[in-house]
Length: 188
Image 1: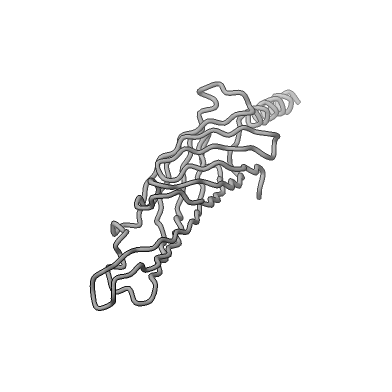
Image 2 (image 1 turned 90 degrees about the horizontal axis):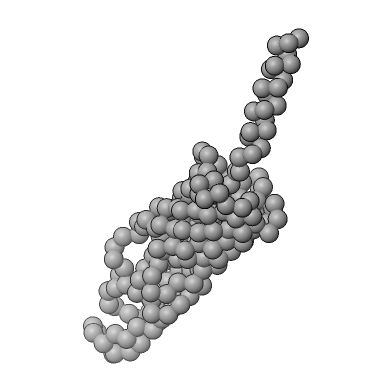
């Protein structure tokens, strides 16, 4: 009987310890960013909207991984006066879909942050899938804007404020595209 009581006390204590640790996974993050001179391609001279989604899952204490997907689109006129066709502006349209995985480490315990706040540092690695279309008749270099690589590595620093246990708002500052958005916790 004494062993049963001791075992029960130990199990209850361990259960209480696990509830004290904050978990960050099972979180759906939906974000909107504004990109301009930075981002996955650096040639665009005006801002454009970037839509972002990821799903975080716990890997270790204070560490998550999140597969992600972003989408943005860009159009521009390009003046071309070489080749067999007469000089004119040609329409260029591009859709870029960066996909990859983001690893995030949360510093809440180290910073002794209030439970309403999360602070993190992250890195993301992925590829950018590019669909580029030129107006008919353009015979120039269709890879004019690209550096030949679609692989990218970004760093992030961010914070989230928990409105309640299920919903938070976040700001993610990145070397790629910074976003602001909504975090939905407990998504299975």
